[in-house]
Amino acid sequence: MPNITFSSPIHKDKTVYAVAGSHTQTILKIAKDNHIPIDFSCEDGECATCMVKITPLANHGQRTDPMASRLTDKELVVLREHKKINAEDIERMRVEDVSVTPWRLACQMILRDEDLLVEY
Image 1 (cartoon, one colour):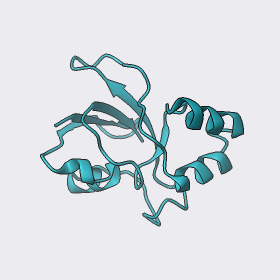
Image 2 (spheres, helix red, strand yellow):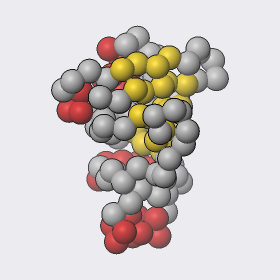
Image 3 (cartoon, helix red, strand yellow):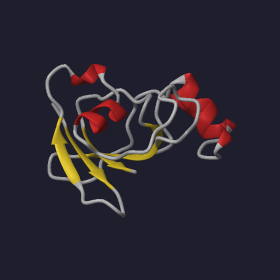
Image 4 (tube, rainbow, N blue to C red):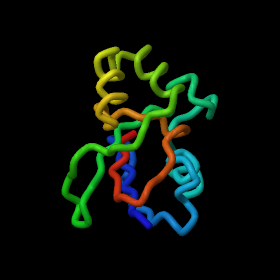
C-alpha cells in the first residue's frame, strides 16, 4: 500500500501508510482517520472546500508523471467552475485517458497503489 504525505503551509507535514483495503477510501477519509485537518464541508463533491493538489511520488519522494486516474463527473464540474480545468482539458482527458490537472477533491478521489503528496 502507498505512503501519503500530507503537506500544508500552516501544519507540519505528515506521512501516513495507507493500510490494506484503503483503495476503497477517499483521500479525505484517510486524512480524517489520521487527524489531518483538510477543510471540508459537503463531503459530496459539490462545494470544493476539500480541493487539494495531488502529486504522485516515486518510492524515494521524487515526482513522477501525472496520475492516470479519472476525475469523477462531480470533480469535472467543480474544477471547471473554479477554473482549474477547461473544456479542452476535459476533452484531452477523455481522449487520452490521462489526468491533465493536479487538482482534485479529497472527498472524491479514491486512493490507488501509488505514493502521493497531497497539498492542502
